[in-house]
Length: 171
Image 1 (tube, rainbow, N blue to C red):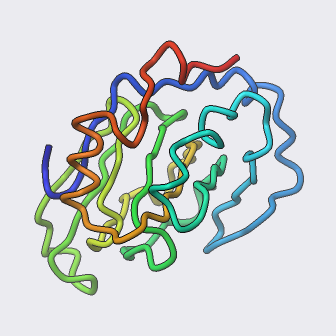
Image 2: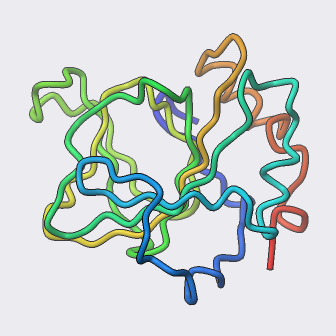
Image 3: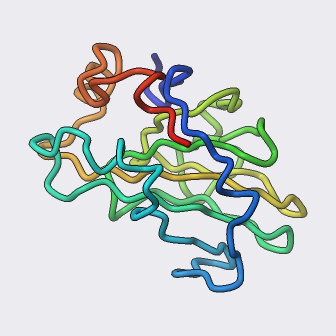
């Protein structure tokens, strides 16, 4: 586990619903990125049932469609504390962490997605994805008394997700 990401290979969500999902009306558009609120899908009850005593606000689940003509510039997440990203298309790409938000040359860590990953959203980060269409699921977390070291410990001990693949898998 790094100061930047934690891979979660046992965190699996059946994403078959994406094949028939209606992408015509995004719930939110942020810098050209279309976000769809999928919190109420029956398949995601495992997220809604996470240990609520750890959060000051319930987790939120978004299906995100990043169009190829846009790029998500370097940023830190101001509203959420941490996030699980589940890459759908492409399955693998690099997430780049920076020392200095305004300097693309200040790379301090590069994470290649191979599975769902929890990321330290409070460190400047971006994906060099201009010209690339991406589809992914984001699960945003709002943690009481947040610290990255606490989140890493919870992930290691599976406290945040008190279930593994068999109960996180949804149809």
